[in-house]
Image 1 (cartoon, one colour):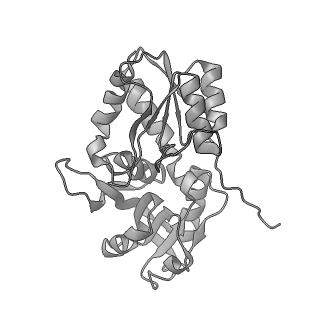
Image 2: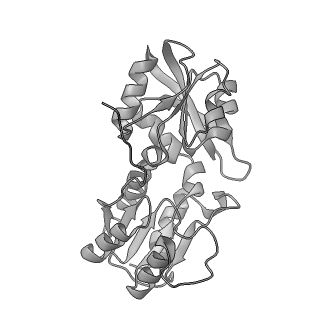
Length: 264
């Protein structure tokens, strides 16, 4: 199948016009008219993911995070990005990223994570200006019934695979309205508060971000990788449901670059 047929299918769900100005979503390595027999879906392009692509005969690697985010001046394998770009070119493996366009697409990243956590009645937290109805970053909705804040965070850990959740002091003992933003979502904490959320689940929070709510809601950081691992399932579903004769594989080599040491 031509790469263009595969990427067009993804872009009907998450148009490239939805990506942020700083982003580099789209086809990064490869040509649209090239033919591939299978695609591997992962969070990041790494040596291990490329090993898996070569081993399984996948001529296209589709990731959430773009491998190339800033301009490259050299291709001398000095560092992971240069090494993986050079390797992909040498081995004829195309690289495609679906990043902030998947974050803001209706039914995209935050929608999927919220559903995983049992949150329904979802609406966009920060709508995007543009021609795509329902596009924007983050979502807010309600649990079927209120539950203990501690129990909700433990559910979040279980369903995201998070080993650690950093959180502010509990604003209340129980939560019902939940706001969610996958990836680095500190900038939407105010939107979560204005939406009346009891708790805001996101990642990549800094020290002062935990003070910003000032008791108005609980804010929780589940980890960047943990919040965005659902990208693999979203992209797999898009392709497998629309390209039934094309082989799509979920990567078994996507690994969190952050490791945790827990005291006992």
